Length: 148
Image (tube, rainbow, N blue to C red; front, side):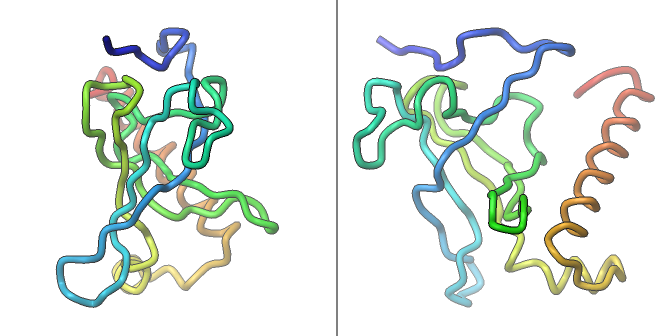
């Protein structure tokens, strides 16, 4: 029997958020040896407190439909740092045991800064840029008449 992890439905006005722990990394396919993709699993609450177990059903999460392209952040001593972009899930969509993941930012920073012409920012600047990009994207989506 499969159990879904969410306890409430999301809507345009009721959003869910949470945290997870990156379980493993996949090296890039160009052979540089650098980590490029991150993966995390959606652990059932019965594993809370166990090594590699759940953070608890009130905390642990996995991305859902429409979350692709969203920020993967980590909290540091200096605040929040953008470390990646959420891009995929593997499984049944929110069931315990499903896997999610995305692409790490670090391997692409030189390309991003070279392409955009934005000088390398500190954590706060990168976070502000990411928020502005998300807000711009949402504005364009609303102007087209809804979320895709």
